[in-house]
Length: 147
Image 1 (cartoon, rainbow, N blue to C red):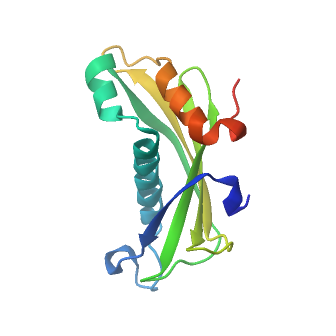
Image 2: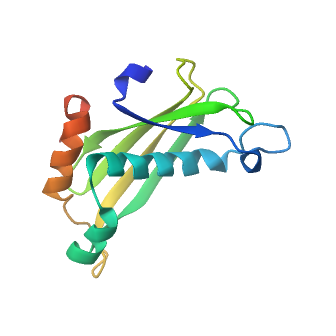
């Protein structure tokens, strides 16, 4: 994909605490960047998933996470984590990610995270809230896959 395939991104500057002994970003931080980008995406669409837990009794659980490392990311580098919802099923959502240097096309990493909405009392899957789907469609509707 290209950066233009994403309507939303969140910038980061790689901190010293995020690099390893080789001077590159430690692998586990990629998932932290992905998770933070999801949080900012939800803020962009105006979705309060903390309130979802309180009012609906459902919450999203991560059931899959994948990172494909393409090229090193180094200390103090400005990067953008691009995120989009690629698919919404009855109870699940798939997010796709790409990390690029700020303002450049060079792909450093890509990934996917899959969430399943779960009733917190029964621990069974629950439908993705219709209002959340509507809000996601305002950003990623043209790119969104539906079953």
